[in-house]
Image (cartoon, rainbow, N blue to C red):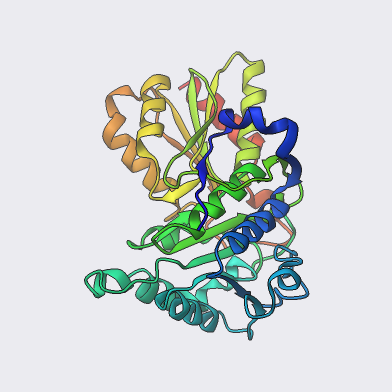
Amino acid sequence: IRPMALISQPQYSFLRATIMAQINLLQAVNSALDTAMDTDDRVICLGEDIGKFGGVFRATSDLQDKYGKARCFNTPITEQGIVGFSIGLAAQGSVPVAEIQFADYIFPAFDQIVNEAAKFRYRSGDQFNCGGLTIRAPYGGGISGGLYHSQSPEAYFCHTPGLKVVIPSTAYQAKGLLLAAIRDPDPVIFFEPKAIYRAEVGEVPETDYVLPLGVAEVMTKGSDITLVGWGAQMHQLHRAAKMAAKDGISCEVIDLRTLLPWDVDTVAQSVEKTGRLIISHEAPRTGGFAGEVSATIQECCFLSLEAPILRITGMDTPFPLVFEKEYMPDYLKVYEAIKASVNF
């Protein structure tokens, strides 16, 4: 593998004149896959309809033409088969990047992921592993997909030691985090927020770079309240923060980027400063990852809190098609929570 640079957003400003591209989040995923396959012959992409068709969202477009059918190929419609085969590939030294067409369909592969991939290294006493495995899956609502194409299953996998769970919210993050995931020594679940696949456009280096897993990003600094989220929900948090600013409320906005392991220190330092915390995600409230963040921050920042920690989440129902807007946490719900917390 060619050496790679660890580039944080402020550090690459000097590159903009020559190697920056204005691309969307989906194109950034494609660029990351292209870069990974170009720099390492062991990288293999597999999934349903990802070959000539490029997958349902076209994330793998042109990769089969460029790298051949042996390195980018279609699989049968069997998620447990895709993941099981990928575990075998990783165990024998390949670097598979498996696509699950929608995150909702990852559940048939749940046993393979949590009982095999996550435990492979531990059960063998580090004699064997499938650490080269990355599983990509478009997740979340916002596209009128109904109950089978809109779920956010990240919390299920955050309960599983041995995995890493990563979710980008910008095009820049998508490329850097996906390259880091592919090259990480542990199995990684990489959830992609499909609602902003084409809505999110940003400057992305055309060169090879990675972003560190397990490190949150402070997107906006503030002093009155901390807002935490990931994926497409970050756009709602930014919008709510701008509304709150008109009321004189200064919001610090943090994108976790990695949920397992998540960056406790960055969030705790922010809450110690602001005294208030709101966490927002699309998944249902009960058992959602916001509960883990809330409990951990309460334990380590209790004496700094000026108001109860609030969670803005989806509802404890199957994802409704006709009531999607009512179900989804949005900037208005976050804005009302900001006012309630500040005025507590």
